Amino acid sequence: MFDLIIFDCDGVLIDSEIISAQMLIAELALHGVEIDLDYVARHFLGRAYPTVLKQVRAEFGIDLPEDFEPNYRARLLSAFERDMQVMPGVVALLDRIALPWCVATSSSRPRAERSLEIAGLADRVGPRLYTASQVQNGKPAPDLFYLAAREMGADPARCLVIEDSLNGIRAGLAAGMAVWRFTGGSHLLGQDLTPPPDATPALSFADFNAFETLLDGALRPAS
Image 1 (tube, rainbow, N blue to C red):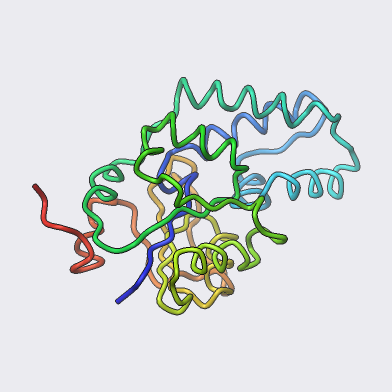
Image 2: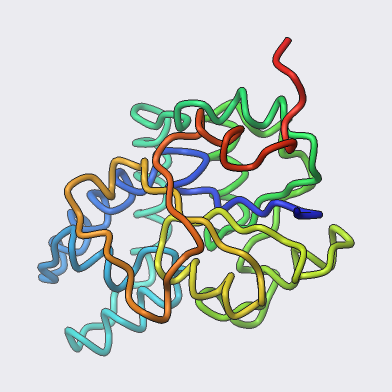
C-alpha cells in the first residue's frame, strides 16, 4: 500500500507533548503571558519554535528576552529526562516494521536527537531524522514531508504520515500523502478530537498495538 512511513516524533513516538505544553505555560507565565493547554493545542502543537515567538508577539504584544529559548529548552530537557515515556507499543512496532520509515519533526535537531536518546530510540532512528531546521517553511507547510520523502527516495503519493497535531495533518495532506492521526498521547486526553475540514485524516487510532491490523503486511512476524 505504501513505500514509506513518516512518523512525527513528539506526541507520536514519545509522550512528550504534555510535558512541553506544561513547561511552556509555566515559562510564559513568568513573563506575564497567561495561556492554557487548549491554547497550546490550538496554536503551538506541531509548530516550530519561531512560530511560537511570532504568535506570542502578535497575540500578547510582547517580545520574549533572548535567553528565553535556551532557558526553556534546558529546563524542558531536564523534564524530559525525568518524566518522558516512549509511547506504548512503539519499540515493538519499530523493531518489526518491514517498510522503509523515517521521522520528521518540528523540533530542533538538538532537541529531537536528545529526546530520542532519552527515549532509547536514537539507534533505531539513526540518520533517518528530518527536522524543521532543514526546510524554509515548517508545518503546516508540506516542505518537511517533501524533504523526508525525497531523502528516502519515495514518491509523496506513496507515503503514509503518522501525526498527532492538526498542523502536522495539514502538512501531510498538503504534500499529497495519506495521513493517519495518532490520538494516544497524554496531551490529547479529554480533548475534542473532531477534526476541522482542512485537517481530516484518513483514519485515527490510539494504540500502536493495533497497527498490524491497520496496515496488513507491513510488519515482520513477531519473534
